[in-house]
Amino acid sequence: MEIIKSEKGRDLLCYNGYLYRFDKNSSWRCIECNTKKCRGRINLKDGQIIHESEKEHNHTPDIAKIEARKAMQFLKTIAKHTELSTQAVLGAVSLQVNII
Image (cartoon, rainbow, N blue to C red; front, side, top):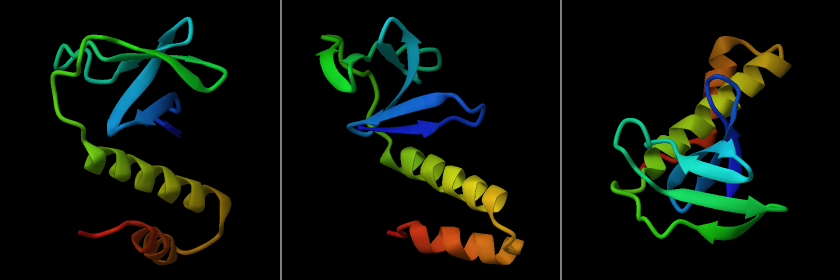
């Protein structure tokens, strides 16, 4: 379980190859809820999962999408907090990304 940032700066929860966004009252909803009508949900308390919805995801996990988001987040962080050239930043990010 890991928290990353969305493009708009909101928290996204990564768990078992799925991405969730905060909904309300400690509830996290699958980010595919609108596009694919997915009903996957997780409830957290103090950083621990206390409930996973009985309704399964209606799509497969997308680990590549999560890794791409992590790489973009890393790229933005490096670019923002260093004075490296664009080429150096991209080189640092490419070292972090696993190519299969």
